[in-house]
Length: 157
Image 1: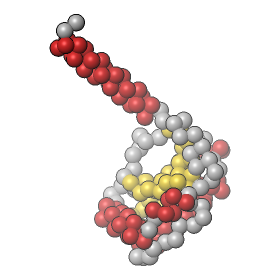
Image 2 (image 1 turned 120 degrees about the vertical axis):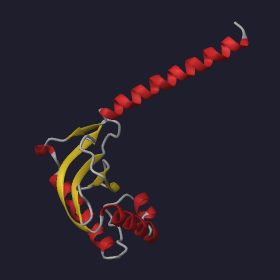
Image 3 (image 1 turned 90 degrees about the vertical axis):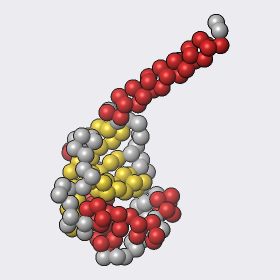
Image 4 (image 1 turned 120 degrees about the horizontal axis):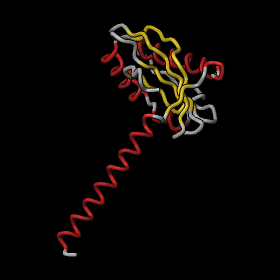
């Protein structure tokens, strides 16, 4: 086999591998979350997530740095500096307006991230036409490892 054909064959093989990998990733992404039936939701954890999210978003609306409680993973607490919180608060206000409230929407888990529990809340913000998602993620040890405010994706879970 000459070098030109060999190079093309390797490139085609690499391209097909990427296509297969991309197809597998896309298929996994579609099925990566499973809704948790309401009767199986950890109500205590859900309510704690709601309380913490409301405290943080209220503090940010009022221009305060909010010390993240012990419920948060140590790594998350480390990166939640006053500067990082101010930046997040400013970005949320720019995108959605002032925080006004939130209500529970649903809970999900992930086969790709065993032990993680995703609590989704619909936020009410002064400038949002549609309620954004307020997401609080707990790990298998009961620590919060994620907190996001982002546009609502009705097909996410």
